[in-house]
Image 1 (cartoon, rainbow, N blue to C red):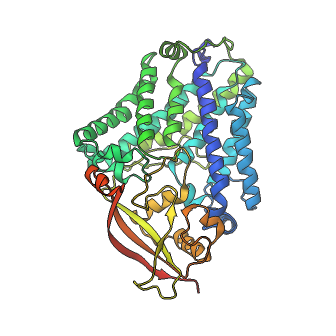
Image 2: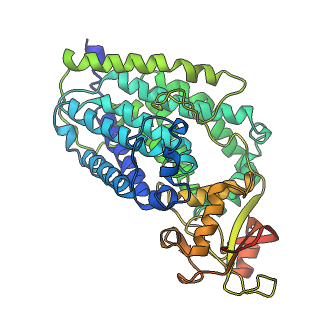
Image 3: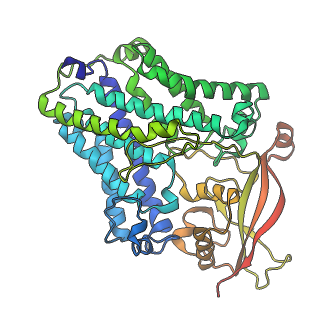
Length: 475
């Protein structure tokens, strides 16, 4: 029975529990701040309207029979409090079922939000957080060693996350196969950060090496997560370093951060102390797992193994699904990202005017968003791991159609000068006053070259304006 006790992975457990809980804190804070304006009683896609057709719900939710913004805030702030308690280590100081109950509560609370979140919560990292929260719930407490089975299942989650992303790239855009994908990606990614322009301006041979490194990290390294130590720790370290490069070169909400945390499942204590000898060595937390704890852990492990059939089949399918859940509980999912690389950055720009006639002589003022590019002179900001949901969906508009239900609702809120909607923006050019008209234009954006930056001071160059929604007003 000693095999079931991973005595050399206490640091890994601490990182997993506290790290996943830290991401839950960010996720619930994002929900408390943004959900009412986006999906609340008077939001762009109101949840009460969704609940009128319950058959469209994605899965279980506490809001199935009743929703209110007040209840939503109770859920969000309860989630923040529970997750913060794990970050500081309170539940871990008790019996193993205490952190288990806390994580299962976080899983259920956040799943309740995601399952009514519609397009604003349709991102792959939502289900990733849910699966991670459920899995690490069974790592136990400081009273006994972490279970080996749960650590391996966490590594299996990292494998699906990385290998799935690698396969979706190889099977998708030819730019990943001819190594040119990074010629475009740093510039066209959903939300660049302060270093994205620097990364974009690197020489093309460096970009090709980036793509090769990505393929190595996602298609080869994940297999070594299941090798003996210290090989498994080295594989996890490669994944962590790759994710850190993505952290410093872009804004991908908490996707990179939670991947870093989960990769620690394969880093053993001896390797940590070899790399960081100044860290104190903790006393042992026992050598065996009691049968009353081992039985539920093995039962959950068996469940996750059985549920793995569907994502395994998906990995080897020619029609591989990206970011797909195969059950209502969003456990053991399929992951992937950027199977297609956008070559040109098209930004949707929303403008308004106070003038009665919306012709070319009118003074049009631009609404500025917090994260997405707008003002060409403004340096991109760092927001990850925080998720700006409205800004992200603005990036998807030119990839499909601006005629989305939520976007027209957004334009209506701007015409009403709705305060909760305007708080989601960086700049309201009318300081709370209602515009007479709003319109939508698109521009081609590209990063300024070094010479252009020196000459103009601009971060972005934009041209090719095109009106995609002509001036509209309230009836």
